[in-house]
Length: 493
Ligand code: GLU
Image 1 (cartoon, helix red, strand yellow):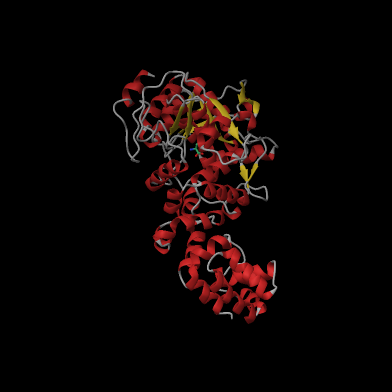
Image 2 (image 1 turned 90 degrees about the vertical axis):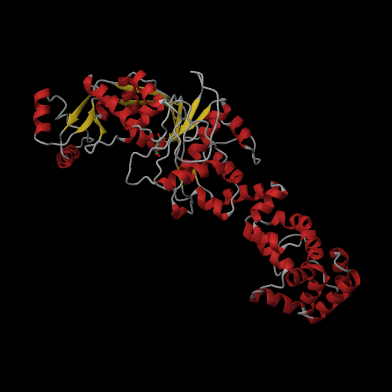
């Protein structure tokens, strides 16, 4: 361990992101969780949920949430995704207390910067005989797998290169053969661990077989550096998708062989679409970026994700501190969590309903701001807040109220024609008599025409607002103003 610390602890390593933290050094007992994305795309709902649960656990335990960039796949990793994922985590309200821009002595936090360190661990494993070079070609391995499958056995490494002596290895290297590095799994080992979510898990060493920890091109296998980094960075709790469950016994063996601490693992159930298959674009799933661009509030997304496969005592929209306080392993479901777009939308509606005016104005954007006259801003918000879900809805109402645009489809025109010109003549007269006080105005129309209920309110609403539903007319009419209201009623009189 000494060599690693001295090699990598000099100075903070900062590559991306404007976020800096000055935090005290951690104690050995700090609870530490992590999010370890591969920057090969934008964060989608699945990994956002993993990040969220990890951040909630850290917050609940007064611990540290660490961000590590798993960019060993240099071809698929892109710096714009690194940048984007940091912004997306910040947007969702999940800043990391350790990671890029926040070195706490365990960096670098980009795996692409840690090759020397992995090399050191490979050497140790090889020197102790716990790993060995394997010269089998992909073709040979494929044939061996086929043969095992044909014999009805699950495929695992045959052990062909497991016992080559030093001369045999040298001869192959001298002949220019490429080798992978394989971890030697003791066949009689049974790996048992208590998964934080799924309870006791058992794996037999003989079922795992010797596995590759370094590829022939020299790049590290994902689960090698992932496990080594968790240990070196002091991660105590690994929460991740159930798809990684079978990696865990391999990772535990690697850590044990290196004498490194093994974190506790919890495997969260996968998110599936309404048809039960893994959540994808096909089910309407989007990246955090897309949701943000559509106008979703981060609180809505966080509250929705927190309830995907985890239940809370409260069904209210909760701030992250409250979500953290209510987070419990035994409230995490083991069954796949079903994505429900309607639920996400309903959290969004709650977030809009609870947002403060300045937040809403910023969210609605400059178009809306420009449409709404300064003296009507407060009334406008009061009127439309219960009826908008996205900024576009607010813009729609701003246009209805403060411009002469009023698109009416065929069905709405029919409603207005059916009400009749006499009805609208009475409406114009009632408006002159009562002004924009909607109750008095509607009473006036009612007593002049005898229309009541839907027959009374629907034609008035459609003619004045262009919609069959929406904010209270009592709030809309004064905003519309006498002039515009008169013109809209007159058009059908
Ligand atoms: N880089 C891995 C992934 O994105 C991390 C897996 C893990 O959380 O251990 O799937």
